[in-house]
Image (cartoon, rainbow, N blue to C red; front, side, top):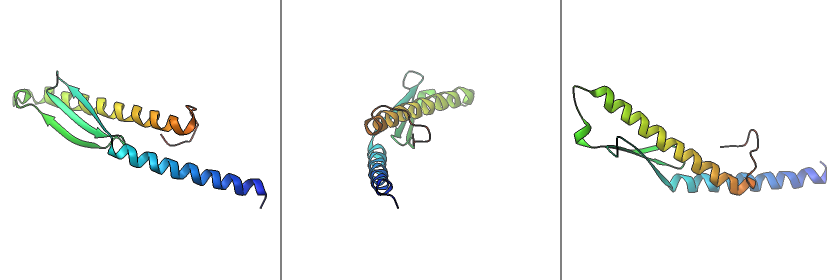
Length: 105
């Protein structure tokens, strides 16, 4: 095995360890998405996992469930977008801001 290949493998292992560290950090970070002026709030972690959904009782109208569904979808999408942005910002620290095809996130 060429000497350079061994060094490359060591570097890739270090990168993998750093990615795992970033993912663990992201799991502990929280982002919030809201809709309806704060009537629906969604909390997600930095890995885009939905952790909480809070719905103000005033927005619950049995005659207009569709509006509530739309608000929940909107808040979830906003929280996921913020989590995705957080992921990209954290990965930029590792890649120096370069977008590498096939690289996680």
